[in-house]
Structure formats: C-alpha cells, structure tokens
Image (cartoon, rainbow, N blue to C red; front, side, top):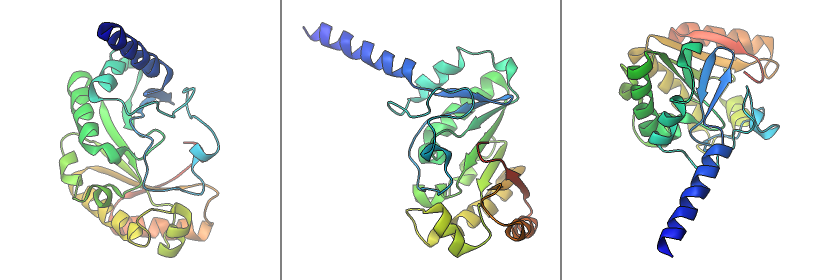
Length: 219
C-alpha cells in the first residue's frame, strides 16, 4: 500500500512538471521561470492580463522547481540555438537567489552561455543582505526595472510591499551591480511614462554609469 501511494505521488509530481513551463523562448534567448513570487504588483505587469509570454503556454507554476528539475529541463533542449540564458518568468527571480545562482553556475559551466537576470532591484532588501557580490563570476549582465525616475511615482506604479523604501533600495542595488558586473541596464516600459520622464531616466542612468533601455510592453 505504501509503495502504491509513493508511486502515485511520483506520477502526480511528474504530471505537474510536464504541465508547467520552466524554460521558454523569447527571441533568440532561453528564459528561466523559477518562481511566481514577487515583492511588487506593478500596474502594467503582463501577468495580470495574460498567462504567458514567448512560446510558453502558461508561466504559472504548479510548484517551485528544484535546482535539479531546472537543470534537467536544460538537458532536453538544444542550447546551441540560444545566445543567452535569462532568469525572468512570472515572478522576481532574486526571490530564489541561492537556487538561481546554483542553476546559473551549472549552466554556465556546462554550456558556456552568458547569464542575465531581469529584476525589480529589490533582491537585497527582500533577502536581508547585499546579494550582488554573490553574482560576481556567475552573472554576466543584469537588467533592473527602473520604471520611473520619480520616487513617489515609483511607489504608485510598482506597489512594492516595502513601500517608500523600495525606490532607494533599487537604486542602491543598481550601484552595487555596477561594482561587480560589467553589463548593467536600467529599463522602463514604453507608453507607461512620459517622454519627459524618459529623459530624466536617461539622465539618472548616465549619473549611475549604467545603460538605459526602453522596452516594449511584453518584452
């Protein structure tokens, strides 16, 4: 009877893994979806309007995949097709920073691909420590969602659970990233802020010494 229960549990876990999307394609990159947790509830967030992006059917996870499950998914695809591995998905990837870095190190070692994190920049605040130095030598680039140059507007748009402290934490995170990573970009989403604010974002990025990019809504 115990063997039957264990077998049934294993089958259910396998079905969950088959149904949910851990890896998905966007352009010429492979994206890694490891969590649906996020410290923010952005007004423009795509997951509030649809279930997926890229070639994924749904990015809502049945459970957070283990490091082993994520690495196993990579073994099923032809990595020569992709330019870059991007940790993103339907959640904030740094919510699982320890597991993220384990996966990234394994993938980097095996496939020699560039590794990028798309983040809201609140990872150090959320984890209670400066997580950026841990990325050195593993993560090649990082894209931080700036969203707006205005602290008050940021709180209104991003709706972080950390409230007013989130904007300053995001800026500090970016400053730290500049110290340890060669390629740091801050982004805003097209049509969500004015052209005047986009100019201010560019000026802020210039001051921080990082790139600025305006991305499309579903990118």
